[in-house]
Length: 111
Figure 1 (tube, rainbow, N blue to C red):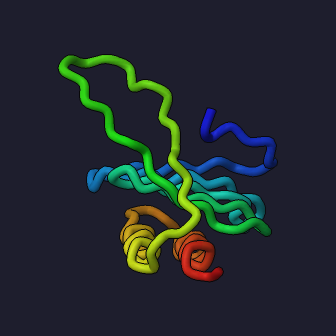
Figure 2: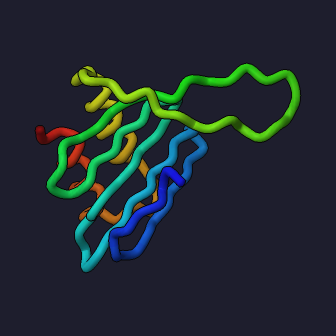
């Protein structure tokens, strides 16, 4: 449900061993929306809208089970340090084309 969208375009999803996930929708070479998550940190932005940042609380589970609803705790403020870290993660995603990498980094670092 988190990734459900009404935007037209091609969905792309990257997952890395560094425990990150990047999802975005692109159309004609332009990113319309992206979501980046790593170690519970979440960043998302849709074209023409402000960046949103938050975190997902970890769950303590004794045995395997389905994760409960992954509710993002959205933050009003977030540190520049986290934004820089997110941009570095995007910089090092294998297989992510340079143009998409630049667009996502711009979405993260440009207010």
